[in-house]
Image (cartoon, rainbow, N blue to C red; front, side, top):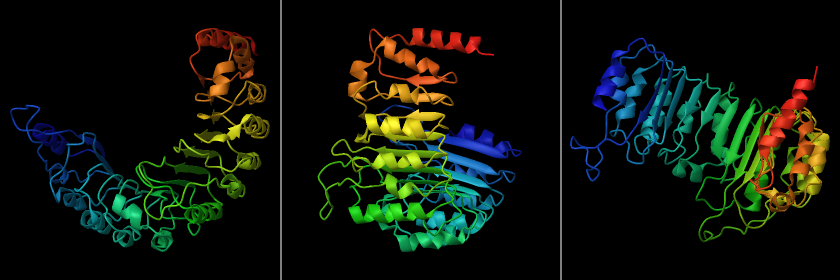
Length: 384
């Protein structure tokens, strides 16, 4: 690792660098040896021309020495900084110091570290050039993030993309300039209460300039925490109908139990006629034949449609989907009823999708995708 870092440090003309930190062990290299920490950042301080820097620990044992990331404060020309899975090497002190010194940052990603509180938000809020901010995977921060603390970030008038955890009912209604928003309950967390979820949706609904929205509710794992409410269906889609600038909408639920959306709620999405990409994943009975057909009939600009793990119980919706002439990608896996009824003949209905480039359906022994693609390509060649 030392030789690699020495080589990188010598490349003083670099303007962009992505560095994966692997597990580092003693000279013997035996599997049983204790992993060592490395001072990677201290070796990069001479790269004064760097504008983009990404450091990721892809191995659970790969790690930086304590305080090493403070050396990055010397790289004052950075426009983009991503420090992902560095664990204790990026805590409150490091995040605050970086925000105070790297004042030209436009993109800051501090995913999966140890930001234990909201203290660093005040420093981050002074990064007036920031257009994108990612703070997911910091359990201490996630647990303490509230609507009031999030409002500190309203000083970031150029912010267009914000990725935070939503387990505390955090909303973004006062960040009207946002164009991309990703909100989710972190893995291994409890389900948000109905009040928390309503607050989150109210904030999202107020972000009327959004063009891309990703909303994730993770599966409840283990025993519910004391005071946590049982998951209840909610009318989430009905709260999104005012987001008329949306072109991409992703709603994903990892809860394998009761449906997250109220019955019929997904029908409200038919109002978002500007959508070009729609993912409804794991919503179970909230997305059935009726909902899939209605969405396909109304969202005629769709280029990407993913209806994974819902309850499409028959092939009835395929005729409506086949009329989405702009579609280039379609995903229909995880719908048991549809899976059991899909035949070669019913699949051929989709050859009307002349622009289709990717199709993901369940593997069925008597259904040939090769035959489907051959027929579709033949039709494409015949078109003027």
